[in-house]
Image (spheres, rainbow over the protein chains, first blue to last red):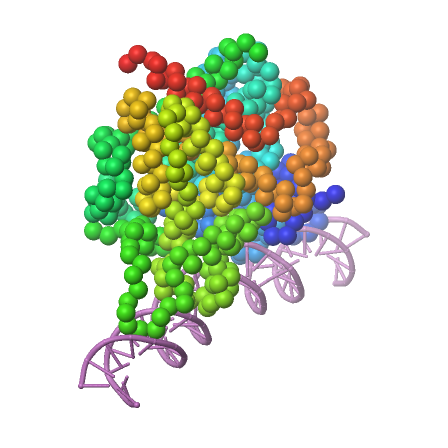
Length: 250
Length: 250
DNA sequence: CTAATTCGCGTACACCATACTCTAAGTGGG
DNA sequence: CCCACTTAGAGTATGGTGTACGCGAATTAG
């Protein structure tokens, strides 16, 4: 059986690269490049670009230039761009050493904040396809730790996994919204307030048309919250819901 | 002031296209194309492609070919690809006519399911940048309706907006995960089960290494749930949390 | 020294968005 | 009726992308 396919990434190959040994052969010209250097460089370039541009701006050429090598040299170590993106995912994951003895809520909250931080530090992260995720050493280590900290709460494994999954996707969603908005600001040089001010005439017309009576009547501060506030609000709600689920007699 | 920028989309221009009048001039060669036809064609092509490929596969050439016109003809109606994506967002939104008299929870649940359905029908939707969203006629109509249905609950507008935002981003996140996984299946022709089976050796090795003791000890059915189940679980949790927030004396 | 092996990468191709410019196809005024 | 005017459609060219292929350079085993 194979995991190969037409144009996208090969998950099997990515796995081999993630877990494969890095011992170099005895014969032949010694390498100046290495997989780790390439992945690290890709992350650096992506970090710079992602503040204003999307992931599509991360080109093999740009990575090679950053390393001072020819573009095609990268392909000796990586089958293609998609697999490189996979490797970048695992590369930036940091798993805390310390463990503590908190309850499930504190553990999940810390995890959410750490993933949020990761997305803020590497604004390309939540845009990479993470299907069939957590296969790398670091990701697996993080998941192992998470379960180790959560299991004492006495919740069954399947429920734990669903809590982790739902939370992950939630954080992912808010982070992407936030990053998209930040990018729009930086790229256009137009702040959020300025933008809405600029669109005021159009929206004013829409409101005056009478087609959106409820919108027109909304309180002034309806949209007056930061993404951090939204993030915390949703996270607290999610956890309150988890608590209700756990306490519920089943 | 301008909302223009270097390479991406021009939000002001998108707005004009969304709200602009479609009256055609009296003089000159009559058009065979129209903005609506182009947007509709773009949606059709995207719907086909997005089942297996990402948004980047939606090219101006493909849209033009689908319409049987030259590529550059599109640019008479649309400033560029980014603006076309903006227009597609509003184009596929459907706002229910009927209103009903449900409580906030039923209204939010229906909204979540409708957005979920939208993402399943148009698997490219949650991948489009929706920063500064809901500016189109349909989006605005939907938001207006949502507030109209929710306001009787007596929750203040700002809290309502945060609930809507958090829920939207949550659904967005889960839908993206689901679509990514579905895509991986279709593109590789390898089902999820087959994939994990194929990677079993690698993961077996990892487990046997002793580096992931907790993972190795997980119950068999830990990952045994569908995305629909995950979606419902997280949504219920989120709403239970909202309920706790609403009841909380402040 | 030679052969084997491995690495770096130049060249080439297919695809992409899109700026510019020219031609086609209509209409209103004389 | 005809022609100037106006608008629509699209061909060509430019500069970007990922990457297949194959060649020359660098090293070591024999």
